[in-house]
Structure formats: structure tokens, C-alpha cells
Image (cartoon, rainbow, N blue to C red; front, top):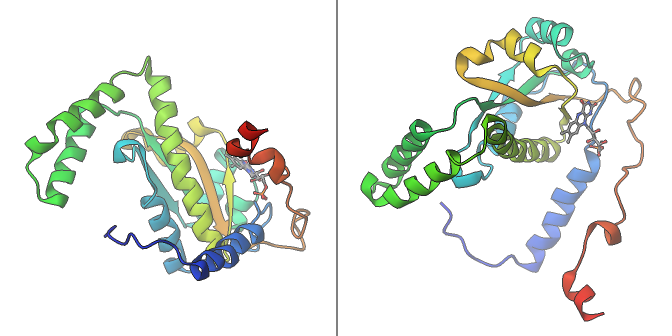
Length: 233
Ligand SMILES: Cc1cc2nc3c(=O)[nH]c(=O)nc-3n(C[C@H](O)[C@H](O)[C@H](O)COP(=O)(O)O)c2cc1C
């Protein structure tokens, strides 16, 4: 339920800083992992976080495939993702967008919304038309796929955050051959195409030259622009 509208208290703001920000400082994109198995409930939490990500109109035009089988990961490593984390990690998550996003998918979402909220489908007619106008209004399939991919990356962000909170390593990866990965996993048969993957596992500090290195981010003054301050200058 989303009925809790209490303002954050000072204590919870401080808690957020210690729990969330320290988790995000702890995490890094591990290049090498140590083959240790990640517990199923941690994987469930990571996938749940992605599942709860916001998306445009709530359409969630993507799926997350969870690959745990070591043999399949080894095959994917050889055929599509030549990075060691794929086999040294415990699980591989593949974020794959829907190939088709059109009237049928919008009708399904509207039906789901009506069922979940126990309201008549007809109450959502205007909303349905607005979504259809958007998804049918892209110039071409590529623009539609890029829009869908942007939603998938929000899921990726929350999955990375959930992994960090659980102190499990996770590496986002675009360094793979999407066509080869789609082929190896038979994604076109499911109406899906991969856009980004994430390995989940535990870092191997001895093998990983990046382990323990300081995090590199632009200074806050460059990243954060307080417009009120600038406008008053
Ligand atoms: C969309 C995306 C794609 C990435 N692709 C790869 C990749 O293919 N292989 C890899 O080792 N790291 C990859 N990274 C990790 C980045 O290099 C890393 O997040 C960045 O250097 C910041 O460092 P940090 O995440 O360790 O703090 C990717 C990150 C993102 C967000």
C-alpha cells in the first residue's frame, strides 16, 4: 500500500545516509568474482526491487531472466558475454525489452489495473487511449525500443541498489553481443531482446585490480546544480 504519507523524520534521514549511501559507496562494478553462491532469497530481493521500479505508464515493457545454471552461463560467456564475471559470479540477470509494445499490451495492462483496483475497465478508457497514442506514436521501432530500454535501466538501477544493500556484488554490463545472447537464450521466441545484463556474486579482491580502489565520481559541485543558488547570483 502507498498510504504512508508521513514526512521523513530526522532519524530516518540519518538512517538512509548510513544504510543507503554507505551501501552505494561499498558497491563497485566487480571485474572478478570468487564463484561463491548467492542465496536464493537475496536473488529474490534483487529481482523484487527491479519489479517494483517505476516505469512510463507502469507498462514495464521488459522482463528479467535469471540464469543460475553454471553450464548455461559458461555457454553464454563463450558465445555472447566474454567477461569473467559471467562464470565466476553466481547468477546472471538479463534485462530484456519486449519486442512489441502496442495496443494489445496496453489492453492487457488496463485489464490488470482494473482487476487489481477492482474498477470497471471503462473507467480507464481515456488513460488507455493516452498510452496507446504514446506507444503508437514513436517514429520507428528503434525509438520504441530505446524507450523500452530506458524503463529496463531503471529496473537495473534498483537491482544494483538492492544488491548493494545486501552486500552482494553486482556488475552491470553492456559489453556483450545482444544478437548472440538473444540467440543463445531463444529470446526472440519469447518476444524479447536483451539490452543490458547484470552479474551477481561476490568479489575476488585478490584477482580484481579494481577491488579497494577509490570510487571516481565528478565532484558534487560539478554534478549537482542548485538552480536557486545560481539564479540568485
Ligand atoms: C550501462 C552500464 C554498462 C556497463 N558495462 C560494463 C561492462 O560491460 N563490463 C564491466 O566490467 N563494467 C561495466 N560497467 C561498469 C562501469 O564501468 C562502472 O559502473 C563505472 O566505471 C563506475 O564504477 P563503479 O560502478 O565501480 O562505481 C557498466 C556500467 C553501466 C551502468
